[in-house]
Image 1 (cartoon, rainbow, N blue to C red):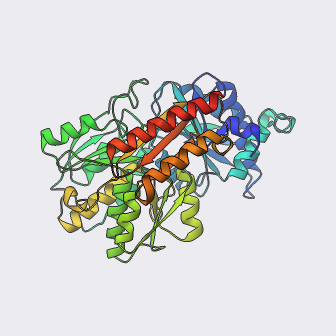
Image 2 (image 1 turned 180 degrees about the vertical axis):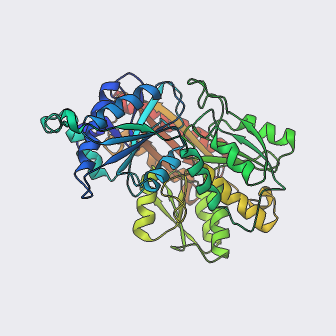
Image 3 (image 1 turned 90 degrees about the horizontal axis):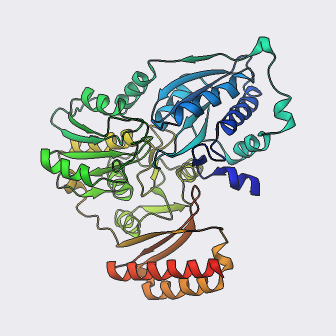
Length: 456
């Protein structure tokens, strides 16, 4: 991977503070030109079109228009669908026969940040090689020489029924023999991209819906709400005596659930639940689940008790999907709530994942607390360390020694993982073990040592 790519593309497209390099209107225009240049040369068609969606951030308007300008300047048409969940953009790219899709979102980050990520015509995120090609084109003479003539410019149009198409797709993934007529659901849309489609699909399936986080103003996305902040949702679930609470993030590609008692269930717990259900119905492929190195050790133990195995990947739902496709799995995800049901979608889909769990509840007649009663998380400490430079961890001798000491203390009943964020100037220190106090102490010791090692 080149140094240039490391500065532009992270684990999930291009991301950063809005109006600060690389998340500027100029860069969005150049990226629009580059993706149009790449895809107009594929497919053997004369006419090409690219879909653009966004979440509810204020800066989305700026990037949407800049991308559209770049794409149309290369002679490629644009379809704009406005605020739309990332998984909806993935689905619609395929459903509307587009060459590619572009999603403007920084997912769970605060409104000041934004991002641009790409999907191919098959609905999957672009392979590294194609992203590298796009990055190599930005600002190049090859790109400047590929501008369309004035009589061959692309056209831009807005589609108003895109949300309805996605709602139908969501409903088609719910068993036709069941409904949510007897369910009371609290839904937190994080003032993000699912603020319209989320309440609609649950209501159309019959649920009594109590909605939160459905008044976006461009600045309140993920602000004390959504999947990163499920505390208010848990309180509301208990207050209205709901059967389940659903918390999405800003672009609705991840979800955490809250059971009827107010217990928060993360992606690992939902993977264990769904793996058991899919195995019992004979539809789980690969004899296991794909998750990342961040997934709790409890998931691995729970799957082992079910006669299933866990295949781990590096952090990032794109890598989970790649492993699923390569090795024949149809269930995977991340602790953060990116769940991928490959029989139903090509990327993480918070609403679709929630509906899968609700279908298990409807089919079995069991409460969510009953379905997850056998899952006990290992205490886990996760600390973020701000870094000026991402030096390889293996190149820091004192850090390696500290990690070895920590692993010796934990033995086979714990784990240590230290990695750099792919989207921020952060190092993440994760420690798991049997004692909450012990893992917190070890994590803090490792974080302090990392600061010293990086400053040396």
